[in-house]
Image (cartoon, rainbow, N blue to C red):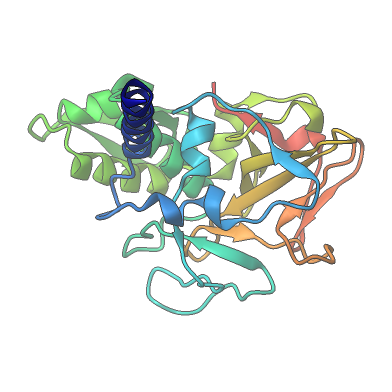
Length: 282
C-alpha cells in the first residue's frame, strides 16, 4: 500500500514537472508575463468533430499555436491607437506589440513571427530577409555592427555599431527590414508550395504587389471522420496594426476556420488567393 502510494505520488510529481517544463519552453520575448492559459491553442474553439493535426513539440508550428491572445479583444488597433479592423473581420487579437511606427504591416508580421521564433533558439544565422531590391539583410551581420546604407536601389553595408545580440538589437534589425521589405520581396524569397493539401502551419499565402497582401496559417485541424482539413489564418495589415485571427464570415457557427478546396479561390476580405500563392520559408 505504501509502495503504491509512493509510486503514484512520484508519477504525479513527475507529470507536474514535465508539464511545467513544457509550459516554460514557449518563449515570447516581447511578453512580460506569458501565461499559457492565454495561448491561441486554448482560445480558439474547434469545429464539432475536428481535432488538431499533430506537430512536433517546440517546433515553429507548436510555437505559433501557443502565441498569446488578448482576452476578449475583437478590434485591431493601429500603431497610433486608432481602431482599424472590427469584429466583422477580427475573431481574436494576438498579444504582441506593433511598434510606434507604420512599419509592421502584413508581410512584416510574417517576418516578425519567424524571426522571434528563431531568436528563441539562438539561430541568428537563419534570421535573414530580402529587401525589395533583392539584397539580403542578415541578422548575424547586424549583430556584428554592420548597417545598410540604401541609396535608390543600391545597398551597401558599413560597420558603424558595436557588437550586440540583445533582443532589442533584434527589434531594431526587424524595423529596418520592415522599411525595405514587403510582399514582393517575401514572395520571391520563399519556396512555392504546390497545393492546399500540402499546406503546413507557418506557411503563407502571398499576393505580391504595391500594395499586395499576405496572410499566415497559424493552425490546422481535421475532421476525424472525413479527414477534411480546416485552416486558421492570421494577418497584419496597412496601416500597421494588431496581428489578428481572421474571422470567416461564411461560417454559421461563427468560428474562424477556413476550408480550402482544390482549384478554388480563398477570399479574405477583398483579397483572392489561390494555390499558386502558397509560400513556405526555406
